[in-house]
Image (cartoon, rainbow, N blue to C red; front, side, top):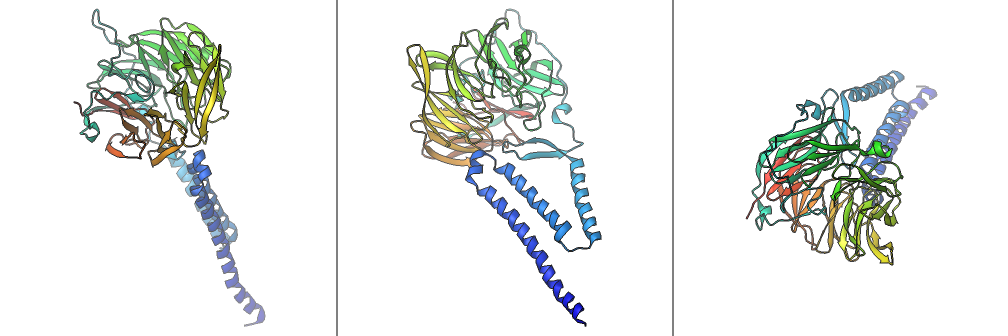
Length: 527
């Protein structure tokens, strides 16, 4: 063997080792980036762990593809064939799969591209009115009913007087289930009826069923469909029952007032078209609030007076007010500083309005372009608890009055609870909520965290007496003690099987849970 051949033969192992070193470096870079993302507290606080994990995996795959094409040492033919195979596989998957939606932590949900959307497979529910018995009394909510978003007082707390002392032990009898269209609306109840909003094909619906059986009583249909890949399709807001009527706000801004007994349309408005506001990125989600003859709704993506009040009797505009863009949070009414106030969580502020005129009584800036979803909660002694996800955290505001002027003072502010899609509930001086998916307990006195428990995903929760009823994002229901001493799981209900962002409804002994595919009604143990 001549010297040139010998040198070439000796160089081959060195070249092979060099290629392996490059491959190892790429794998270490990808693995290190992935490990950093998964363990980063900053990304966990911001709720970006899943999104950055996906990007890290894609970056690692790109590095491996680069190694294959440039550093592998394969023949040009083999590299081209391998590269073409990878590209073809990627294009094939893209052709066969579509993103049907996302979980709350931005994890995509894939389905076969040829599979029809679920709500298009359901039978249409054309507008249908029910015949009301002659001289029938209006449908009026009772003390055990669930007449609006977050329950009787719009605070996420429902009474447990009808339930057994240890009802959470079960059994939980399934009364009925029914296919349900798309959307994230919850159920509300009054007397023998239950109401929700859903999407079936091109129709946005308000539906009334018998609470005892799930049998449809009436439905009202509007030709409207809101579609958005990240947030999903269909209506988001929950109807409100008041004075024998049901008030429902669709995702495109259609506000309907319907007779609760028959479904007959009393009046309708498109609040976005009337205000000239463009829709929000993820659609109208704030549930209407009815109080003292007025229907309060937030508007759209414009700082030009982001809240409106309509007269419940005829739908005429009573006022428009505010100086900030609407968010996805629902308005609430309570007493602060000795005066009844309408409190609205806007995109970059929290504000108190005079309910009768819309005049702004006070404003507290909380600047961020991230979505505000959680509803403000009155915490007693003139305070309001507000929280938001995406790294914003929570605050306790003290509303004070000096003469005719009101002001908002921050008593404390921290990152101990970051409610992304859900709302916090206040029980015995503590706030319970899902902190970027994990159940947490925060002391209202100083904002310190009492404990942080397991993850339920971006789900929802209610307080049924002293028990937290948690609608897990994966569909199940967890029952947890509202106890500042620590997380204590009391039981679970095997319920829905797919992504669930809808709020549960507890009406007497009935528990209604739904998502964008079906509804299940359980009967809870009673006294």
